[in-house]
Image 1 (cartoon, rainbow, N blue to C red):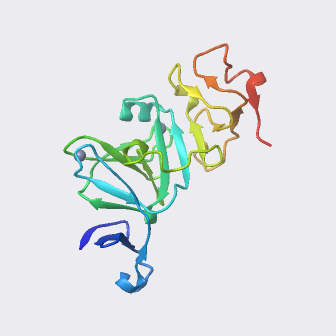
Image 2: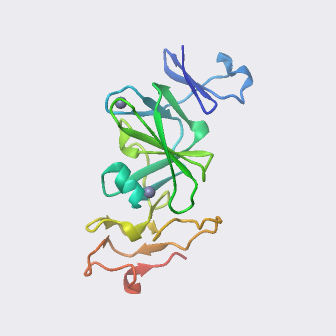
Amino acid sequence: MLLHYWWGVRCRNSKSGFVVDYPSEPNGGSANCRRMSLNQGGCLCGAVRYAANSTPVRVTYCHCKFCQRATGSAYLVEPIFQKTHFAIISGKPATYAQASEGSGKRVTINFCSTCGTKLFLDLERFPETVGVYGGTFDDPNWFERTPQVSRHIFLDSALNGTVIPAGFRTFREHAWLNDGTPVEPVIFGQPHAIGSKHLGNLGHPGTLVLPS
Ligand SMILES: [Zn+2]
Ligand SMILES: [Zn+2]
């Protein structure tokens, strides 16, 4: 049964679970189907369901104002996947697009029109990937969030009381400038509480360990 078609990936039900057909495999025929363990997630009401069949490219903790407003929370935990490794497996998300304050490029929120749960972001600036609202995975702890694969961005707008763990790459805004130039990260040598003086401050070099 064809469940849905999304960004070139087809998902069908089979006895052993979902099968993902890649368009690069001739005709997506069953002989070419690869069985993969899919990590699934979905909205509160269950109408929209999705799956990812790879580990995230990276995990971004975003403390920007857009993510605070969109989540109603302190920050977004955003595992990022190649679009070819991400598929809607039931339902159809509604979309809301807005221009990014920083880049001016389109940012589209995909959400459930019934229950309002936001599921993933589709960014004009990064056309190959989607950023998932990490808490919507059935098991939000399935993906690694070590310092090697994670980073905290937009610390300049992080809420007071948010604790940034030691050892993670952090950025005052984006990790890249609009022209693609990478920004030098700051890595705290000890946990850093936003808005707290005694635990350290972004402008205080004594609490920083710069990457080698
Ligand atoms: Zn829903
Ligand atoms: Zn953000």
